[in-house]
Image (cartoon, rainbow over all chains, first blue to last red; front, top):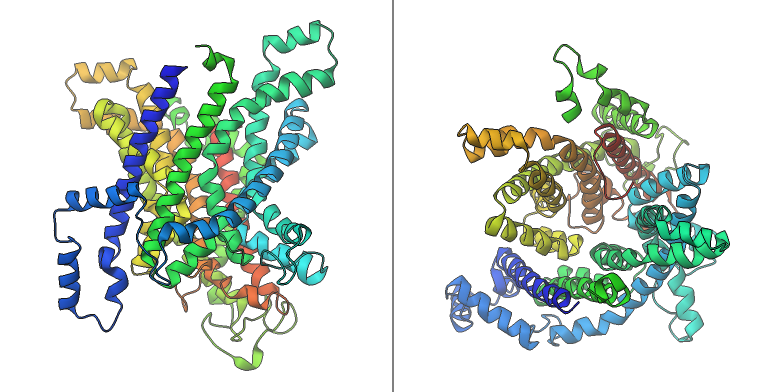
Amino acid sequence: MRSFLFNRFAQSLVLLLIVSVIGFVVLNLIPGGPLAQFGLDASMTQDDLNRLAEQLGLNRPLWMQYLDWAWRLLRGDWGHSFRDGAPVLEVIGRHLMATLLLMGSSTVIAIAIGTWIGVRGAVKRYSVFDYMATVGAMVALSIPTFWFGLIGIYVFSLRLGWLPAGNMYTIGDESVLNYLHHLILPSIVLALVHVAIWSRYMRTATLDVINQEFIKTARAKGLSERRILMKHVIGNALLPMITLLGMQLPSVLTGALVTETVFTWPGMGRLFLDSLGYSDYPVVMGLLMFSAILVVVSNLAADIVVAIIDPRIRLS
Amino acid sequence: MTAIAANSPRERWWNSRTAHRFMKHHLALIGMVMIALLTLACVLGPHLLPYDSLYIDLRARFAPPLTGKHFLGTDPLGRDLAARLFMAGRISLLVGFSAMLLSTLIGTLVGVVAGYRGGLVGTVLMRAVDGFLSFPSIFLVLALAAALKPSPIMITVVIAATSWMEVARIVEAEVRSLREREFVLAGRMLGLSATHIMFREILPNAMGPIIVAATLTVARAILMEAYISFLGYGIQPPLPSWGNMLNGAQQYLGTAPWLAIIPGAAITIAVTSFNFIGDGLRDALDVRGDHS
């Protein structure tokens, strides 16, 4: 297990290095490069820009600039927001919880419903339910998240008036219930795609487990079908799903950005769009790097969790 | 493709086992018919309708569908929604299709080289793929689209630049397994160049998975265009696209819900159809998917 963990750590470090290179390339693709935010300022002449570039070392060779930039990332110096001058990491931190809350609740929904659909589909393979679930998953994967959100708002907020159409809470009412009430619709909207993905993978994983010898053994021991399913099948089928949880994070973040926009949810996705609108490139770059680092770290964490739980890896 | 190649040369492709299996796949057929109808509507529709997609008529604002002369209603500027939907479809389908061609090209090149060369080159290329996949795609697309000039060609390039990784992964795995086969060894023994072996010997045998991945990439590219145009960084008005038609729809949701429902339904139908076709091709070409 130690060598497995060591390898995984090394891989993640290499991946972070590559991610930072891609981020640096994107930063320099923006016309005006790291100085883009000042290029729009009418009171800056080209001479001023040139002098700034000189001061900030932007006329050095690219690899030196990269090392400098990466070193500042490592030390936590991610620059300052162009809008309010606050450090980028602090700005991201202010919006992190809202996004994590949304992602967390929608992941719980996706796992619960997706597991149920997937296991049922696998147990009753080729039944009407299985067929409907397959087609349903493909349709669900094709629905634009923002459109599903708009339809949800139209039906549940405007027509039925059951759920709020946006925001995280009603101003003046900061009770937990109020937060939960606002959380329901965006969580379901964000969960749709992941219910589809989760149920497909869960079906495959369950089919893999069902045909294995130890299930036959469990039956031979006289365990009830229900106990076999709940304890042996689902338990073992969920194990590879932990890896999927990490792998799905980029797509959850993509969905979160769109969902937050539709529901005016004050999270990272909304911050990203607002910052784009203000050409606040330090925050845009910060979020780009932050999300990628989050993805790499989560994938590593998922693998470590699997390694701890799975005796095949733990004891090797 | 593999199955087609395996047939005797006299047999036509529509008699091949692959074609038969595809035709038996109901969902794929539904998808094909939908895409054919949608394409036909987008190509012919604007010529058959009496309204131009850009013609503003403030007297006819917010006409609901199926009420007057506008059969899908009008938008806040009184423009005919049907005409706009078809014109937008041209853009959206074209962007989706071109982005697919470009990203499949990049992905195949990277995948073939990485899979055949292996070693350091292969490792570096595939780690780059992992790196790109670590970014939530929309963050990367938006950052690039906001920074560059948002012309339809640029949008296509940006979408392609962030969606070639899946194809690269699939092709790399396929090529890596084909590399060890006898016919490659034979080619090498005959003194064929590495380029010839990669692109003339191995690539035709890896076409199945590439075609499936390409079909699914069209679906994803249409969705991505819709996302960024909805957010205002994609196709710019007055040029309509399915995504930017939805851009202002949210504020009229209470009074004119059809503005949101109709373009969104078009996107969903198009994307679903391509996903159905991809699924059918996967079965017909006997490609092992990661989830079936």
